[in-house]
Image 1 (cartoon, rainbow, N blue to C red):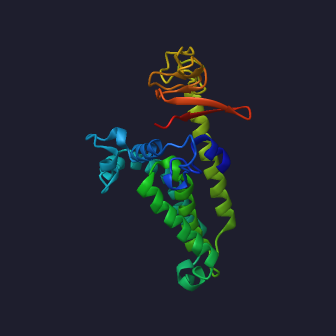
Image 2: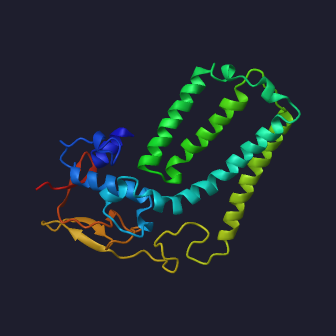
Image 3: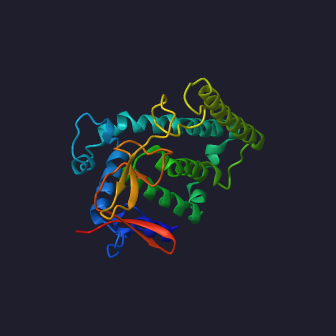
Length: 267
């Protein structure tokens, strides 16, 4: 996977500039820096910002927090709330009738060093996620894992704890059924929407009324060799390829070992 990333972008992890190789003929430091700032700003809610500052200014000094909290934070809360409620229910019912807190032992909890290191690891990446790319889909695994591990760390990883396995199993099965029902209901609701190829994702345009492959502009090099389709700034979607929503007259194409390699010609 790393080799493929390097072959495509010149970076092991694009657009993390510390992982890029600037000595490759298709490497472009300027594009990497711009993409890095742009991706971070969009992850922090830049399109929803009332004051459109530059990427650098928006990303710095927590200028983004106010906008982010009004949009992404609400989505994150909505998505994570069912998991939190499930854990609260587990804590409430699993120890019902048991004198758990009298037997609660901090020493027993911290005996498991591997679990403790896992908590440290997840905490570090949660902080990194929040500071650099605080979008739910990027932090889903970190957030969910952190909540579950904390639950295990405090309530399961205690030698003196006794919990009701039947109640625990029943709640887990109930939670699984709720999640399945919610997703099935979302698919059923899609059936009522009238657009091309419904209920499947839009293929040719984000505009639901458009259902044909768009004819984009063909871009040629100086020798009149076809390079790519330019989409005039809109989404390429499932159009003819190769396609790009960016226009650059310095694009070059070479063939190496049967592969077509596109790169920016350095001035």
